[in-house]
Image (cartoon, one colour):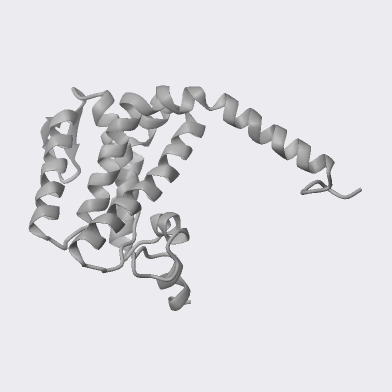
Length: 194
C-alpha cells in the first residue's frame, strides 16, 4: 500500500506518474494533525466560498486548484532542483481562502487559539502571501510554499476574472460535449447495449 500511496498520492516532478498525483495528492496528508489543520481551514471558509460560487462551481474550482497548485509546485521544484515529494490539500485550500479574502477583504478573522486578536481578511491574505513568498525565495522547507502561492494566486484570479471568463461561458462547451456523446452513442461508441 505504501508504494501505491507514494506513487500516486504524492506529487513529485521526478516521479513516473506525473498527472494523476497532481489531483490525488490533494486528498493525502502526512499526519492526522496535517489533515485536521487543512480540514479546519476548509471548514472555516467553505460556507463563504459556496455562497459566492455555488456547490458545483466550488467543486470545479477546488479540484482545478489542486492541479494548478501542484503544477506551480512542479515548476518551482524543477527551477530549484529540489525534488522532494509533496502532498496535502493546502494549495487547493489556499485557493478557497484567497478567493474569500479577495471578495470579502473587510471580513474579520481570528486564529483559533487566539480569538482575542482579530484582523481583516485582506490583511491575512497579504501576510500569507508574504510568508510564502519569503519561504519560496529563501528556500524554506517547512511547507510547499510554491503550491500555497499557486493556490492563492489562482483563487484571487478566479474570483476576480475566472468566474466571468470560464464559468459563465461554459454552456457552449457543455453543449458540444453532450452532442459528441450523443453522436458517439448512436454509432455504438460508448452507448449502452440493449
